[in-house]
Length: 388
Image 1 (tube, rainbow, N blue to C red):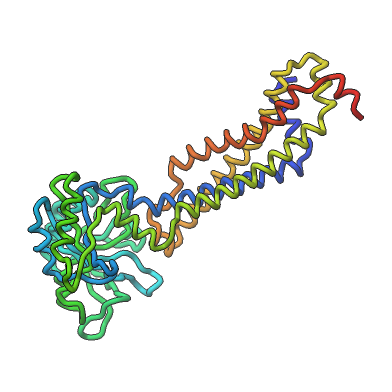
Image 2: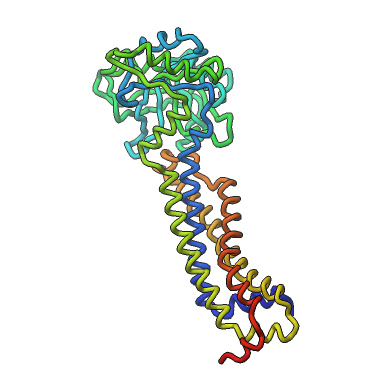
């Protein structure tokens, strides 16, 4: 009779107990997979932020505009390499439920500043520069709506309106861009700021924010301080920070996602630890005489320890792996929902989450199985057989 067979028989002797333990572990790892993926999606923009890229926004709030004239003034600051600007458009198609990120930008400077992020071929790039009604869209967004180069599409705004009171801007897709990094977000659209500013009814010569690159990341703090000093005590004071800090502060407007997720997963694992650990202790206590018989038959104390610990490891591994597989299914379904896809374009179960889950499986198995395994190893044969 092999040790694996003994482990299997001991685990499955009480199917109700095994099923409940497995279910509890599955739920814990399902939560870990889903919430970990959401946290990863929220932080994807932070991870891809360039070290030499800064963002200047209105000091009051990043939703407040800045004068267009600030662009050239910022460009004149010592240490600044290149500057661009952008306006949030509030883009959607069909109806307001089909929204996505759309921005009015200066095409040439924007692609220079984001050269490390956006990949677009030369021909589409030149075509976009030449056509004021032209737009380039990310490959993820183009795939969702089936857009191709040359398509004329009506893009609506839930913020701005045109002189004819329409909220629809006709655009021609001149190119489809991809991300230079595998996890780069391409669920957005870029079009000409000049086309936008000439047709909308308010906000002329205003921009949403300024993005710039520095000649060296070591100059970031100095450049940021000089920019904010330049507009100090003006009607539109600024706040300049690194792109990473800006993205992080934007997420903090929603809340401390990382802390919330850690708290939920931590509470779930602590509860599971108590449940499974207590169940394992009770299971070994019920088999006290059986363990004594095994020792009488020649099973060494170390072998008994390994058998009992293996039981908790197998239960943790079975439930944990099942939970991870289910998280793939759930996250895949969430990613296909239009609203979630637009909000969290980088939602997927990352390899780091899998590695983290495997580590937790080992920890869960060892922590819940060590105490009962140690007690079984220390069990005295005469005392165990004398108990009724």
